[in-house]
Image (cartoon, rainbow, N blue to C red):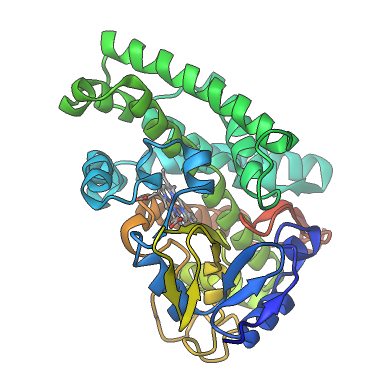
Length: 398
Ligand code: HEM
């Protein structure tokens, strides 16, 4: 069988800056394409769903297991064990759990908007990424876990190191890649920190997520190491991704004044607009899978055992077979579930939380920063976890 091939570096600066022409090329080549750099890739929504719905065949072995640790439920494909672990957290991240976080989240957002406006008023410009977008999710997840204010910037640094380890190339050179080695060091430091926190909560329980684990029946049955990798996974996942989404939202508000006015006048349009941002721009652009020992047939092509597959869920958001005029940003389009939060067994645990943060942040931006524009070209650090890394804004008319 003739398999379409391509030679692209998914990890290079060109893909981070503007992935869309390459994504189109991959999609047009076919539903499953071999990248000569040693990966199979798909940019078709239907095929992404097929792969993610079969975790027994397209597994988390490899990159995901190495990044998160074997005992983290994101890295476990065996349904029963995965669900047992995931269920510990489901209530906290569900609708009722997240509702309790609305008021602290508003406080966090307003406090960071105070700081943002102070810089904007003093200097005429402000980079929204470090002072606002990156801070909100880090403070919210820290609050949920009972992590002290004094540790948040250190946690952000650890999470950034973990994120860059997955965005630096494939195959990962586990012995020499400086990003990987830095990430391993950060993961170890984060694990030590969480073990201290866990022991402290055992003696002084509160009502945060770490205390919840410390008090759980489950904690009596598994080694601390497994509790730690799961807590670490949550602290990491609650950090980078939502910050990228907020960055896309600020970019769009700063480049589309008509849209901003429409949202301002009718706030009920905001949820659909936020989903459209995720569909149109994506955040987690590709998730890795490893094919099981029996191999797997994907879109009619036999993929060999052990093969590395990149499921391009960001590309799926612009698949013309699913969306009409997919390259158009249109908040009024027919609502259809996108893949930005994954699909199937490993679909995002934090989606409700992220949506609440994005909604609250957008309302606060409209209330308190009604007029601003992007002051310099926005830069992007990675294609895999894509969001603005420099997002300079200034007041309109200033
Ligand atoms: C815009 C924000 C977010 C995006 C785009 C996002 C995206 C994703 C995606 C695509 C997956 C599936 C990964 C895969 O299949 O390989 C996932 C899983 C996950 N996410 Fe999120 N995420 C976001 C926010 C969050 C937040 C705030 C948390 C909270 C801690 C979180 C926790 C998790 C966890 C624990 C999993 C693993 C679920 C499982 O294996 O059952 N995410 N996320």
